[in-house]
Image 1 (tube, rainbow, N blue to C red):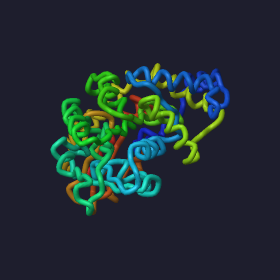
Image 2: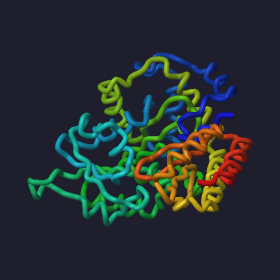
Image 3: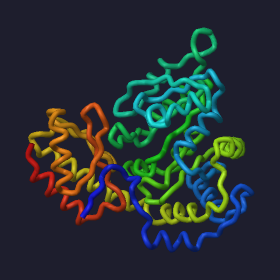
Length: 341
């Protein structure tokens, strides 16, 4: 039995999802003639109480289009240092939009309104870039699946309004935050100018993200998606998978969160564990007392056919997901209990 806890991106479509995909209503999405994709975009926009949405092959492309929508070359976007937009999108803000990232050291990937205000720069000093966009990430990846409080986002929104900045949400794992915090998507739709959401992480679809925003922004986003090579044809098969995931796989995220908390408890019982970040959703980030013990730990996991991630800097990661079944979870908990370093 191979158990892969490296990410929630490694899932495969279930037979039920594949059957739903086979029944997709397809056409040419470049001409907006793909029925299933049109349905998905309408469904997601309505869910968040926003005007329109656009299907993308990846969350990275959706984020990069959002950045280009809201900035001009030479501008600055403000984000947390460990955010996906800053660290894991191959320098996209500089390459695609010609903007710099004003990075903030936050708390587990989350930043505050005061920090945004401190980082903000305007045209009054020609030495500085002009801050025009703030990008948040919810949940935070390197922050161990931590969630923002809506009250803090509201305060950040107020700063953006005061300073004339746009606010974008990288919501790759927003579904997890919604379930964990019992929040409604419209709470976020009211606060952000644009939101990207992913269907291929916790929800288990094979491919796809969506960018949500105003009709005007999404109309511009269609051109930018084309510019970046993201216009596709019969996308309905992929959109159908996302639709199935939205209808069937959101509430079950509670199971992923519960198993993650149980793994947190199992790790905290071990003497060789130095720290486990408090678990809020489906990501467990932890470190050992000695970094030199990491290769030994990975070897012991490998012997038990368990795979996890090395995040660098001594931090390790496990991610629970749709394909991580209860029998696997029992086995991993027993394996952790038996390992000595």
